[in-house]
Amino acid sequence: MSQTITTARTPRQFFRSHATDIMLPAALLALIIAGLVLFPSFRSVTSFINILTFSSLLMIVAIGETFVVIGRAADLTVGSMVGLSGAVFAVFVTGGVPPLLALLVALIAGSLIGLAQGVIITKLKISFLIVTLGLFALLRSQVQVLLNGQSKNVDVPWLVTLATGRIGIIPNLVIIAVLVFVVATLVLRGTAYGRALYAVGASPETARLAGIPVARVIIISFVISAFTASLAGLLTVGTLGSAQTTAGTGMEMTALSAVLLGGTRFSGGFGSATRTLFGVLFLGVLNSLLFAAGVSSFWQGTASGLVLILAVALDRTRKD
Image 1 (tube, rainbow, N blue to C red):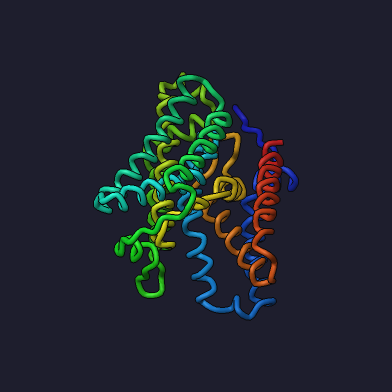
Image 2 (image 1 turned 90 degrees about the vertical axis):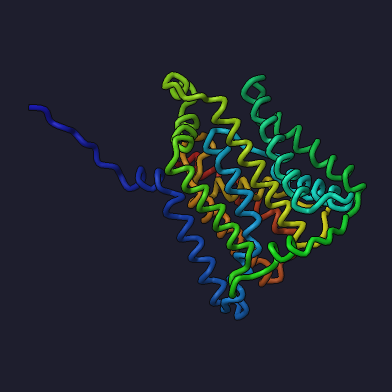
């Protein structure tokens, strides 16, 4: 007669494996309660809608980043990609190209850059850190070149409406971010590609032995990340009415912070769009509280940096 032996997990072991699951929602709730208690301006529906609106572009970028991190990598070009797609769009539109065609060109160009990144990383066996850092600098410089070092106004009414309009009280940006979130969740949970991505992130060698095309899976994750960053760049142009040389600056670190803070593991094979959603909301509420408290916006980068360190520390806690 066989007998199954189970080992009870200690509270410490349970906490380590579920640290982010427990702490992040609790910390988010604590931030919201603190805002409601300390700041009267925080107690309105408008305030929460503003937080969602300001977090929407980051959400779109972070969702794409989530795919790459699940695949055991990181895309440090997303901030530069935001700026580049806006610059490409602005140059084409001001050059007389129909706006819709210019939008498609910007999205395709961004996706092709993501494709190139993935190919270089997987086929030439170069570290993703080296490749994405190099392209981060290259793309940021190209933004300056395309815009000649200054902002370029773009008059495309339908893009402005898309980025700044509302359906009822819900901003279009929030709706777009939700759609991106839903599509990402369906892809990760309900498709063969999603299952393959988790397998590759957990163990590339095991995935390869199981017949999964590891290189192709990783390349697609970079294409997705580049596409979502490019989409966010175009929406940024619609929001501002112009392409800015500084668009997307620092977003790569903020997006990565949101992904890791949400619980997607830097070691790969674990994570979800829902976890990233919590990470984005936490940063959005935190920045809103800092603003309400009169803290200079220059300190928001410090907060994001500290959050990134905390997120990696929590990831290590779960693995040890």
